[in-house]
Amino acid sequence: MSKNDTVTLTDNATGKQVELPILRPTCGSPTIDISSLPKELGYFTYDPGFVATASCHSNITYLDGAKGVLEYRGYPIEQLAEKSSFIEVCYLLFHGDLPDKDQLDEFDDIITTHTMLHEAVKRFYSGFRRDAHPMATMVGVVGALSAFYHHGEDIHDPKHRMITAHRLIAKMPTIAAWSYRYTNGQPMVYPKNSLSFSANFLHMMFSMPTEEYTPDPLFVKALDLLLILHADHEQNASTSTVRLAGSSGANPFAALSAGIASLWGPAHGGANEAVIRMLQDIVDSDNDVAHYVARAKDKSDRFRLMGFGHRVYKNFDPRAVIIRKTCMNLLAELGTNNKYQALFDTAVELEKIALSDEYFVSRNLYPNVDFYSGIILLAMGIPLNMFTVIFAMARTVGWISHWNEMIEDDDFRIGRPRQLYLGAETREYVDIDKR
Image (tube, rainbow, N blue to C red; front, top):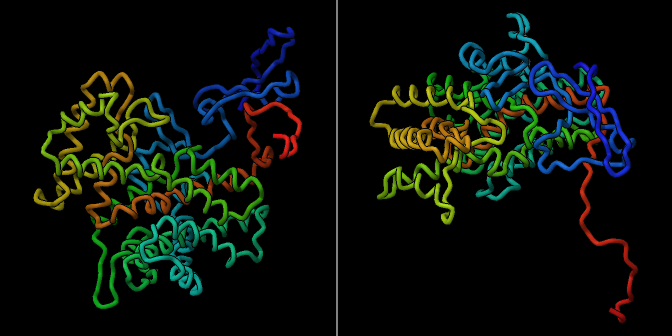
């Protein structure tokens, strides 16, 4: 990260100038370091939603929204989706490099043997209503883990941070599956060390004590792919939340609980659920897809096409391209009479019309990662209210990797954004009987 160049900022009111360093990243746009601006000129910057502000520097994930590029630690997402496994991607994101065989075997063994939850955690679930949303349960249970792992948890000790990462990656599928089981009044299923990460999750979700259950290899492969594609996505809302909460020195379980709460929002992790609801409404209606495209273009109509457009990508979301192909192949394996084919066919037709329409093309409204992922989850038997839970399970490794990177950073300090105050000026208090 070079600081050899500068940009000169001139205050036209006073004529005073300040030289601001230009930071040159490995990839992506140069960034102006404005940290000296308040001291030199007495100004802050205003950037709602942080659309033009880098809150940190990171070595983990790179994306180029204009070109549709996504890379984990320099590896293109397309290559990882094709050749890697979720466990290997977890190692890559946290440690920085792909493991050799011995390292991967050791890491896999650590994660596999730490999937159990403390037996007392079971009682947390009984404190929730049966109809509680699984995400609400996850927020509470993940935050409560700090009550079980508070001894010897020194966030400034690299070994302790690594142990915490192992615990969170390993236990999140158990927490997620138990949230589903509790809501459905089913007995909690313990993890099995003989199964892979994704197979174990499906086992804990769907097996019953009364009969044998073998996870479908087709679903295991599809789930592993979805986890890889959702493992990290740079400084999104939930990752930024984890960093901000963790910057106070809060324990990592609390920080990740905050991230899960942020992910729960319909504009973030809940988008794929909205896509499914939209597609189902179209399938069940008497109108064709063109009717809904026309509604989406009508400014007086509140209807919107869900799953199109992205805050960062102004081209195809590379994850959407991969998921579309996976969805098509998965449904083909299930047979043309499967009940999800109509949703997929509707999605394909919707995408085709939208991408040939100037209204959508001029606004860069391309399908995003949420457009097809929900169909895959439904086909696997995952209910709508578990979609964001699966997202959280995948993103855990990204969150904990960013948290770990932040703690190691020499520039690490508590997050404290500034504001543009537009309230009342200083005024005198008036006694109540004189108001």
